[in-house]
Structures are given as structure tokens and as C-alpha cells.
Length: 261
Image 1 (cartoon, rainbow, N blue to C red):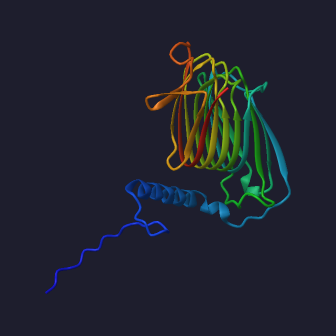
Image 2: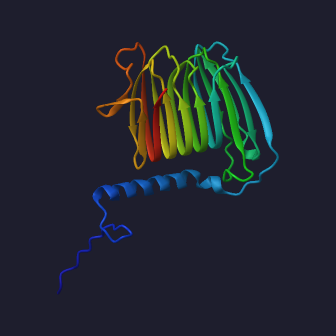
Image 3: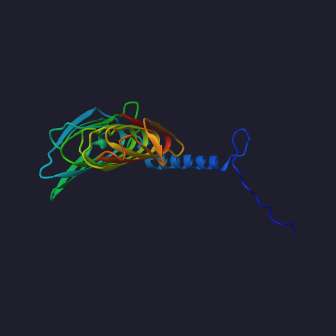
């Protein structure tokens, strides 16, 4: 009786050359990110009626809040965040899928405010063509704010240089984002930016100390004007300025650009 055969499956490139362990790991990460993106946004490809453009505006006052945590959750679309609002938040929404109507809520407990802006829970359509979903949010520059953003797919432009940031947590499934952190901040804070598939550009200040850690997965990391220190990138002000901004950027597939301004 012959002994059972032992089959060893090895990955090969299209040219027939065996893939290295590093290449196999990269391919696995790519497939994993693609699977996650499909699971998260597969529902966004279902058919929905695209109707007339709807425009809504909301204004939220800080009331007695001395600090605020703002939670933004957008399934797909274009997001713009800036400062210079007279109220806590001044928002303009434009969309043409009825189920995408945003839900806004705000509560104050003691001196802490909790703000939530969330895309409607209905199914979606593939962005592009006639489907549109656009948020333009303006926040107050004086109220300390911990900003948390979850975005499925699309483009986001977060111009946060004038805000009194106390923290930033940004999660992006697929798309392109630009984050401006070049403000003259008065206190330390941590910024976490996680991207699945796409490009992330983070603008960093030169006068405030910066320590940035970036991990690109299968992507590329560009660091302009920063020096490598261990597993981090730092600017000239790091270690000598009174304020330090710690930035942690993780990308799956795509490009990470760190730019000193």
C-alpha cells in the first residue's frame, strides 16, 4: 500500500516564478482589504431611486457645554469640515436619495456635549452618475472638540487648523481624504487616521511639535519635511515646543502623504 501523497500549494506569479513570503503576505492583505470593503459597502450597490436634490440646513448651539464630542458617520459621499462657525455647528446637506436624509442629535450632560450626525439608515446606491450626497459642516473655533469621523466611501476634506481640537479619530473605508492639522494648537492631542483603500494626505504644522507614525500595508508612504526617528517621523519643533501632536496613520492599500506646512 503506497503512502499518501503530500501536496504543498505554493503561490506563483503570472510569470511562473514562486512568490516570496513577503509577496504572499502582501497579496493576502490585499485580498483581506478587498473582502472587508466588499462586506462593508456591498449594500451600497443596491438599487435605490434617485430623486430631486434636497437641501437642508441645521444649526446647533453649544448651550452650556464646555467641551464637545462630535460623531460623524457618512456611508458614502463628499464630506467637508471647516471652522469659523458662530454656533457650535452650522451644517448644509445636499442629497438626492431619500433614505440618505441625515439624522442630527445633540445632548448636554453637565458641561460635556455629545453631537451626532449620521447618514440615513436606508440602503444606498453606487456614488457617481446621478447619485449625490454632500455634507458641508462648520464648527465653532472656541469650543474644545473631540472629532470622530466614520466614512464608508467617497472624498473628505477636513480643514481643522482653526478648531480647538482635543482629539481626532478618522476611519475611511475607500476613497481620498485630506486632513489639515496645521493649526497653532494650545494643548496636546492624539490623531488617529485609518484608511482602507485610497489616498490620505495629512498636512502638519511646523511650529508645533509633531510625531507621526505611518504604516502603509500595501501602500506607499511619503514624508515631506519630516525626519525619521525610530519608527516615527518628527519635525524640528518636536521635543522643544510646549505642545505635541501625535499622529497615527494606517493605510491598507493606497498612498499616505505626510506634508509639513
